[in-house]
Amino acid sequence: MTTQPILVTSRANARVKQLRAAFAGHARLSGGLVAIEGENLLREALDSGLPLKTIFLSERIAPPEWLPRGVELLVLAEEVFASAVDTQHPQGIAALLVPPVWKIESALPANDNAALLLVAAGLQDPGNLGTLIRSAEAFGATAVLTTAGTVSEWNQKALRASAGSVFRVPVVAITAKELIALKSRGVRLLAAVAPNPDSGSESAADAGLTNACALMIGNEGAGLGEEWLALADARISIPTPGRVESLNAAVAGSLLLYEASRQRTSNLGPRTSNLLP
Image 1 (tube, rainbow, N blue to C red):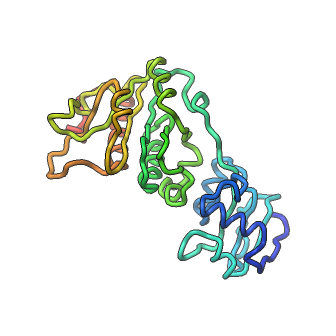
Image 2: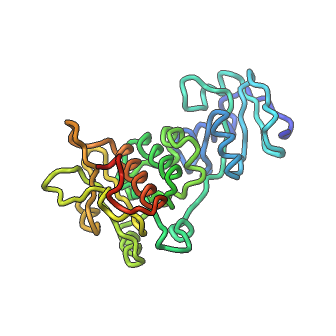
């Protein structure tokens, strides 16, 4: 059980204001805490070992048996709960948690040769970033690196799209200088570009993705900027026989992560995939 719940009927309650600020992404007003809503995300956070600071229940919800001991529990009047959360149809349970903080050194494996990194360079759609974080976990990526201009992984849409993977996959903000430092450690930077004759790219199925590499995915509209293209050791693409110019950033990144995983787990190397011809 949690501690004895406290009934809150005022929208001006300090904890309610902190929850509202966290959902709005105001780190200073929330005290650096992250807000999550719904039983699934709360269970994912707990299963991932993240400490919950405060749990909020709508007065219509009975406290679940699985709530951890010793966590502050507030029961909010229905209208107070609805005023604080991010969704139009509140699920009746939310929490404030301490987000994990990762550094590039702690995100990399002891053996640099095993690194599989995804670089999100200027992604602005939170759904795309969250999906990529989920795919990164699914396909065994080491970490997701984000550049300036990329939406926060704690954006509510990104968090929900990750389906809890953001609690476990290291997401690290990185600069161009730090990417260059990764290159000096033997990590190949591979820029994902559209498959056209002028791109100078090779198919991902032909690229050797079994060694340490970082897959660079660019902005949804503009793609990778010149700064990032200039850093790349090679350019790779996903052949698309259909009549489309390019793939959605989340789809492209997920396919590339799959191809890297396939090459690494099959030990067959490049040019054996049926998915990336």
